[in-house]
Image 1: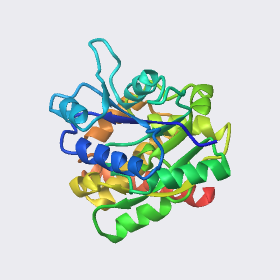
Image 2: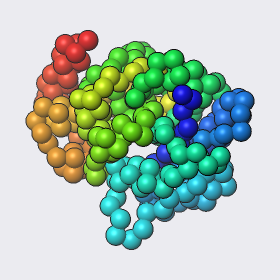
Image 3: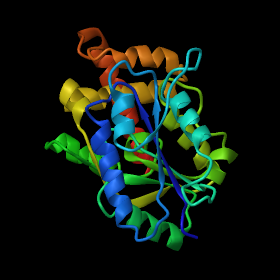
Image 4: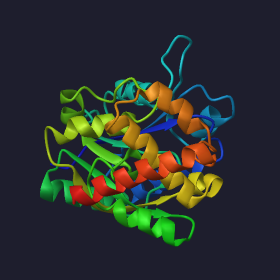
Length: 270
């Protein structure tokens, strides 16, 4: 059956990114050829900038964080899904697209998704990535992201999930970090995660800010500490927020060692 879509975009102080993300989604909607249009939900995590206003002006429905609400991307995604009831035509939304705000979909995104969904009937899938910056390191990252594994598949790639599966595995956990990794681990126990044919244009801002190699090693360390060592998302969030935690001599060796463990795990998973 043709999927009835809802799009959830978690944001926090993203006034510079949100309009272009929503505009690309709406442009892709226009090529679908029927009146049924996916709902766009922006779930705001308590932004202090103009993110909420920009999202509304761009045509999205906004879910704001209230006093006492849990913070972090996981809770934001939960609230976004909870706000979706029915699409514009009155039918119940049965498929969810979780998209990061620094991603831009191609014009044929929804046509390609619809065709793949009807033919293959997946329960969950992820997209390919194309970074907006150049560099060998980024091209390597894009290539690795075409494979499905715990070390190469993340929410940054856009996740398309049937609502039935989302509810079956309990949705995103109430985590401030790595909620996508935990969610995908649950999904793997239930079904195959499909590589989808669509390619997202993704901002390389994190790599630009920290350096490609440094950021890749930082991500490997964080992921290894979580998956292998069982570190808590709260403690890892503090570590992740420090852009220089692997630029000190005492931590660089540990980072390289854990990075090597991650790379070995990736190669063994293929």
